[in-house]
Amino acid sequence: MKKRILICFLCALSLMSFSAFIADEDPLTTLLKKLEEFTKKFPQEKIHLHLDKPYFIAGEDIWLKGYLVTAERNEPSDLSKILYIDLISPDNKVAKKITLAVDSGRTFGQLTIPDSLASGNYRLRAYTNYMRNFGEDFFFERFIAIGNLGDVDKPKSTQNIKKTIALQFFPEGGNMVYGLRGKVGIKATDENGLGINATGYVIDDTKEKVAIFSTEFAGMGTFALNPVKGRTYQAVIEKPDGSLGIYKLPKILDNGYSLSINNLSKVDTILIKVATTSELVKGQKLSLVAQCNGTVFFTSIVNVDNQIFTASIPKATFPTGIIQFTLFTEQTPIAERIIFINHKDQLKINFAVKKSKVIDNQTTFDISTTDYNNNPIDGNFSIAITDLNKTPFNEDDETTIISNLLLSSNLKGFVEQPNYYFNNPNQDKERQLDNLLLTQGWRRFLWKDIIDGNDFPPKYASEKSLNIAGLVTDNYNKPLANAKVTLVSITNGFDMVLDTTTNNAGKFVFDRLDVPDTVSFILQAKSKNNDKNVKVIIDQDVQVTAKDFIGNSINMDTYINYFKQRYKESPNLKPNGILLKQVNIVKNRELKPITNVLHSKNRNGSVDYVVSKDRIEHETGNAFNIFNGVP
Image (cartoon, rainbow, N blue to C red; front, top):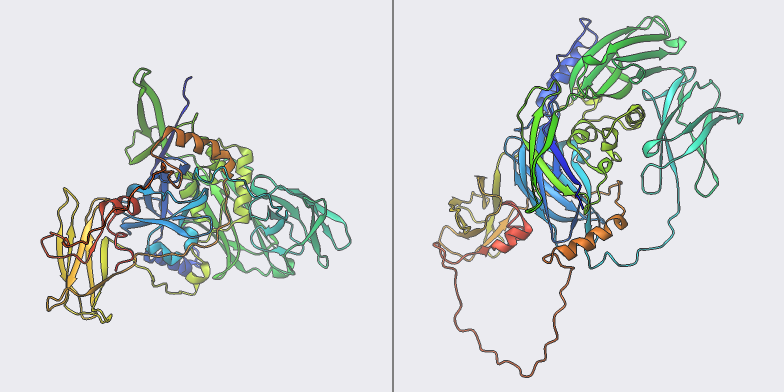
């Protein structure tokens, strides 16, 4: 049978550069300078991980490549040199952690899944120490399924879970205002926080039906409403059990502004409408700012001489990605809307089968890359090859470099199937993506922090190298100053011997370590009086508690057959536990006392702690994690 082969490419994005257009008028000059200063002073990072497949067997290696880029331009970042990757269990505990060195924004390695893990939905989380300054919402996270043959056949729980629907409302621009017709985004979610289909209508306090709605992909949709002063409004939907659910709409303002952005009607133009209540038509000036990742691409002054102001902007003004429009009075934001611009200017991957040999089951591929104008371009790439006959695969479920860096990495909260919007895009998906951005805000910075001039001293530094640090104490836990600490590599082919001394607080550090991704060390210490009866306490590496996560949990039933087949094909992968043959004991063996105690033969005397090669290979990928738990 002819095999179907899926080739999954990931590459660094090539995005067009644009110069910001700033109007000559002065209302926002100070604010724009503050934004520019903020962006330069506090640069941010994004991470993307490319995995070799979407689900795994307990005991397998997850092979991966990481791309660390600047949040502003999606270009390789030199800010951080250390990347942390956590494997998080279904009960939100860190089941495994590795640390990788980053070079020119790139890293690669493997995470060995403990063979004791139960089957379930796990998460991979990746971040730098510096990224912790901006919150966990901007860490890289993705779900993976892990199977263990020891429990994939266990009967599943059949307990009844009460079906509920939560309905949220998101007025375009931020607020509903009496007398101003506007769009309202809706999001219906189930008891797990995932999108669900819902159909309903809006009624006023006289029970008159004033709008109808139905959700689309991921439980999102919209309706239009022109609220009448003095009226109150509710949404009504039919719940799964047949009962009616009634939900109050958000508070409606007596006076205010509305901001409407139409990104769908015209191929090359964005249509903008600003409306206000008659009480606010006093000839004052508003300012409209449009920015992408902290770079301003458009500003305009809105003279409030009428209740409605309209304008159009060429889409070519902006780069591909999320564009944030904010309406200001003086320097106070009063309305906000985000949209997505897609110029389809990503790299093109050209792939062809050059040669295929059925006899030895080998295939040669030709791969070339061009920019969106078909000009040849070089880059740094990663490829994963998967046999579709053996590995179920849904491209909508994948976390690709495009959907991650351009979309989900800029949004707070969980985004269901972000690659759905980019896989075979069409007008329906463009509308559904607009629904997503109407209901899920962009929050890489808050205007209030910039307007108030809030300083933001980073609490967590950007790390430039691998290091091993710790504390030397006596047996009474008193720090020892000027103690000698020696770090010795015992990995074949990699020689390293480093010495240092502790400071007055008993602290030591070996920094700027340039080591392979797998290495074994001996660490020993002695006091300044050459007393080896000391304690060495290794600093723990970066620890981030796993938070509760509402996300796209995976139906494990989909993968059970895959897990069973993988165990049959790979004899090295075993269920958790080994069945031994029966042994009959006929006589107790006489135990002799040990008379000779062997000591380490390393060049500096007896060791304080040894990390074996086997532990290195199964528990960590580098020098950072090997001393966890010492002494």
